[in-house]
Amino acid sequence: MHIVIVEDNISVAKGVAYRLRDEGHAVDLLHDGAEADLFLRDDGADLVILDIKLPGLGGIEILKAMRGRGDDRPVLMLTAQSEISDRITGLDSGADDYLIKPFEMAELSARIRALSRRRDRPVEADHRIAELSFDAASRMIIGPYGPLTIPRREVALFETLLLAKGRTVSKQYLLDNLYGTGSDVDEPVVQVYVSRLRKRLKPFGIEIRVQRGLGYLMQEIKS
Image (cartoon, rainbow, N blue to C red; front, side, top):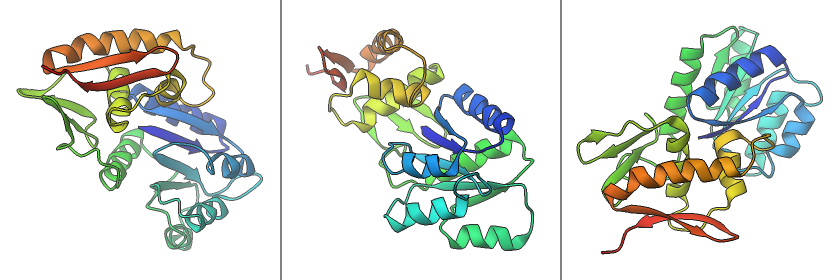
């Protein structure tokens, strides 16, 4: 999953980003409200973690702007304030969930899993390709005999190619989904992950094809 974190507390933001990346998510980090408002108008993330108190523009204003332009992505609000009025304001403005700082990382991960189950995107467990299906909530690739043991980055790569539904995906788009927009990781890293994943998928009737100069696409192997 591709997640945007908007949090002006650098240590909190880095801690959350480290946890989510370790779980296999791609993460974009933003610390200024006005910058985040512009970024969220033209990004491709799946979920937003949004602090309520931000420099430049507050989290509630950002959220209202998102909902006002029809952006219905799940938004998890963060705040250091525990008053019930703040939670009500956030929820009434369109937030999907609310988490009060300080919080446990395990709870944050659980909230994200719950929000991912509510997404309208077709990534439920019965979304199949050849002999495999993908469970977005548990982030598992499931084969004929149960879940496969695959590194998290490769799971994220599989998810991105799966959602493309046979369309070609550029190396840069894959890189953004694996590491977050603006990461300092080079495109050759994508080739390494594609090569590894290709070998794992072939026994299940799936191939990853390279379109030179364009990117990659995933499809069933035709007999």
